[in-house]
Length: 271
Image 1 (tube, rainbow, N blue to C red):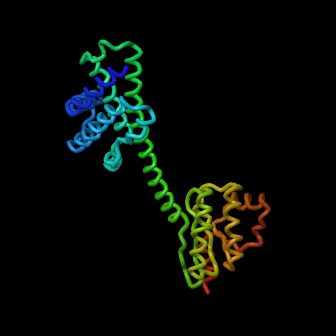
Image 2 (image 1 turned 135 degrees about the horizontal axis):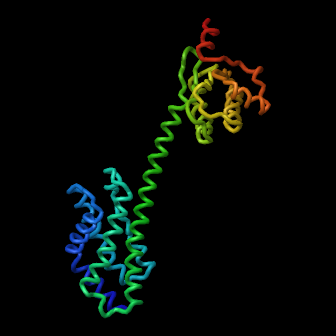
């Protein structure tokens, strides 16, 4: 077993550049991918490095192989230029299959038993798949960062504080109302209201898309927090569904200052 592994490892190491060039060309042709010169050059560099690690990994234990840092798109070149993860994974997978075929066509496995060939392929597959796993993980982590940043921006836009006159501001609630947005209102928006020395906050419900008992509980808890802070909440845009849900929760709407619209509130409190 050791002889065949050393032989294959030496072959990959010595033929690395030509193997990378030929197998990458085969992979792009098979996948019918049109890559820029820069993308091809980057794939070449990464696959050349990956083959070098394959040649080392064939002579290491599984644990030692894991320590080779088999990430593919380490500098996130393909992530940043908008390349689909699917295309990157297909390049790696097709390149791996082409490597298997190359070893057979070169006659390097003629004297190997079926069990030796099976073990060799399994080890090569493991190395390439580990590169795919790590690349996919890194890709998803970057996506999560972007989604988190977008969610933060959406939350800020979905509950802005709009001062309209001294001591009075409007907070229109817009779009879907989720648990994360309720937390954002409690931890981020309410402190801003306090810092702005607002005495009366108009909470406008007209832009809320969904309104169930969970949403109602969260919003009316925020109302209670405002009252404890000495800020008078005013509710506008209360639709029949909202009123019905509030009543079902035991919230007495007639004890609160409510208006059909923000305009109506402003007209009544014009002076």
